[in-house]
Amino acid sequence: MIILPYKEKFIRENFIEFSFDSDDENYLPDFKLFEKLNSTDQYYLAENYNWDDGVEILKWIIESKKCDKGTASLIFWTSEPDYYFEKSESEISDYEKDTFLLLKRIVEKFNNNDFKKSNLKYNPTDREKRIDWSKQNAEWKIPEELKKPTKGFSIISLGIIQHKIWQWQRSKKEAKRAKKRMNRKK
Image (cartoon, rainbow, N blue to C red; front, top):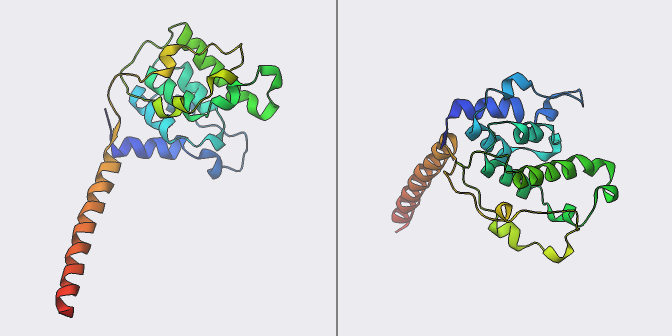
């Protein structure tokens, strides 16, 4: 799936690090703008999201009918869930509760098979292998499906591809210049 540069720009301007641009600490982006995002856009947003902005936007994604299993898995595993697995809700501090509840909601939705689409690829294997599952609190019922890679397409950002092409072209030019400098020294 491809994210076009204009869509990247739209997502970055409206949903990424939005708290840094506002003096209002309770500011949230416009939900009506969020509703314009498709499942691929939501994945890109989740992948690039700054958790310092809080979890409200991530909740929007999880509760969206467009949310793909790959996106939900991405959000789950990038939150460093093993910290929360060892605790019950009563043991979580107030500032951690939103993330804790978000993770519980993702687990619940996986257990209820609420995520209907599985078109986007996410592989949690590296993260999942680092977890000591013996420390898991009994109230966490992590479904096996959430521990496995999702099938589907990878997200490709044209803006990132353009940047990589530019870097490659630049390195080729720099190599030519270096070769010319070496030839002049001979």
